[in-house]
Image (cartoon, rainbow, N blue to C red; front, side, top):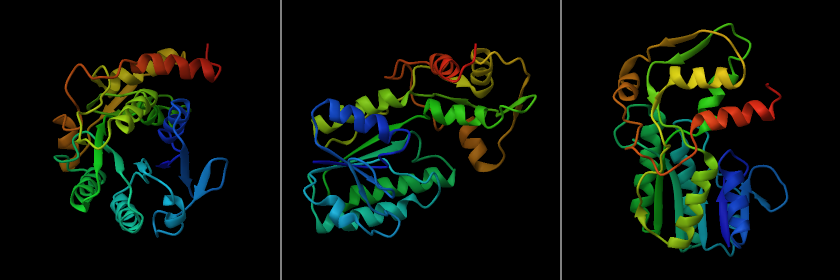
Length: 249
């Protein structure tokens, strides 16, 4: 039995689907009930004992996208200590060991907690998801301009990341594995232009600097992996697919 935390999230949904299609017995963990799910709260540990019953592998994808995810990791590791498993897979982020952003530092702490736990594990670091990049653009859909940060990203399709996770389940505990990254590194400005073109929007793109140490980390490309990345789907394809799905010409 495989337990997937964050099963209803942007990566959790395709990961669960692919695992089921691959013949795995999957249980999703969520704070909300639903088919194939068990209800639990990672922030306080309630429900984790029932969630882990009969589980051999945990894929930890849950995130609040804040600097407190390591608290959830501590709760999960405590529960696993009481209900031992064979394999813990953690989805991390490229560059967390060197980046100044508090969320990245906290994610790196989660990695360190796993490595010190004695639980057989695999850590996969990925670059920014297509949907994460697109969220910046959709939030500005009513503005006359598109405003973006002044640095590059290497976006990756969640479906391809999910496929890699399935491979890691089958491979067994592998500790830290190579990064999984998108096929191209593009300035946010270029991605915004691709997005606007796909959605038939004619508007200027303004870039703004990101201040402080976190901004310096982004400008230095700490969050980028090497090229070519293992993923193959470019952001432009995602943008066109999104436009078609949402009725853009």
